[in-house]
Length: 255
Image (cartoon, rainbow, N blue to C red; front, side):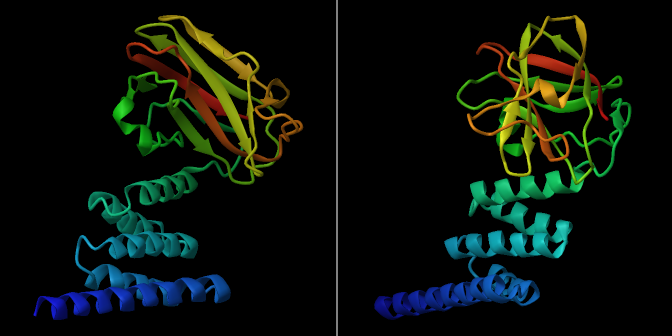
């Protein structure tokens, strides 16, 4: 009888895969996000908890809710995929995109002094084991363990906010000296960084003002940074490998 049970399970899995594929095709061809949500949600509810196909359903459920403008429902589906380890990487990456979009800057000028929790600097979860980010005495305290294999970073996103004139930072390295690269990505996913990364001395505050002309393309042939096309701002820890270092951000402004 084991072969009958196996064939039944295989048939159910095949039916589920066909349902998922049909929903993906409808969503891609006709923009049927609502209909697809029903299919993905049904699969997520009815499939066995650890079925790999359920991971696919949770990912696409989160994606569809994201496209429909339902961030909380998207978070719920993606967190379930991460919690059950069914889609730890894809679900995490999409969840980061959802969170970043919700926190992006919508108008200029903006000034964050970090004496309240309302700010848009986001620490991607992929770097969660490299140190915490927390508010303390009017500063955003970012503790980071340097690792040149994958540079830790803080990220903020921009809506279509118009031309950016300058970025101002009030910074202080604590524990040891720090090297900080500042990167801007544009709406074509091109990256622009500083020719010389910031060198922060431990215990010494530094006020930095950066203008779009200060950034150079990371890849040759990318042209110059368009100050009207900012997509993301990254603060990247490129400190030589060693013990942890803490960056205190006392203020960030974009004008």
